[in-house]
Length: 327
Image (tube, rainbow, N blue to C red; front, side, top):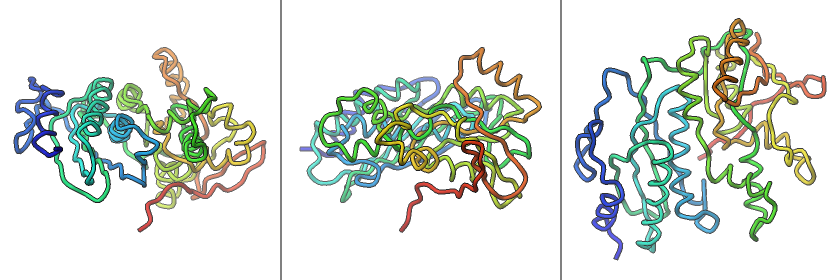
């Protein structure tokens, strides 16, 4: 029989953690952590069955791995270093011991990859499977990045291909059989297994000329509006379509008809988008190249409260759009 006693026992075996940074053990009422003299960064994120995933198309390992990755990405977007996480599980009737064990196998593998420690959580019964993850990060030298701190003339960058995850979700929903095309498998993997840019986020967090930062969660256009604080500080942006990195398959048949939707409004890429003071952009690009970070300059911050998309040498107004929870 699956119950919370079994789950707690299984977690303690898989995460036998007790260190100088984590004074208590999993299973107590709270966790005691040591964070030196630096500030901490805290973020939480939830994955809800039939909203963010389905058990038919995701393995238990993929569900837990994705839930941790998207939460970690928020910490990286602040320029912080993820250190600890807590997860709250809301389990429906019929969930088996094997399923829950596999969930924590995913947490174990992904937490090891991100070098982040599980320090606690909660378990409750629910009508559907829900995973809520809270991540605690540490600032290096108390430096961090916010949205809306850019100024006119700053260059806009992204850290990798945009639209891949959205196209991957489209392929996942459309094709019921096993994917044979290696390019399509990569796109689906981009959606199922986000790769937060932890090292890049830490690097950018220490550069004073990096003025603002966000991770692309809901779509490039809507997250860009949040990055520049559109309509609140009278700043806009100009983005060049040809400079936005995208997969070759996205501009081929049959996906080319919808490529703008995937790239501009699709979301779920969890790439970093950030602005750099144009006086330092050459220095920044040289340094990023030395560090072997993939960065792409896609546009610039401009005066005015509009986002302009340049495509094929022609300009048009880009209306912010993307994923928004509606209730």
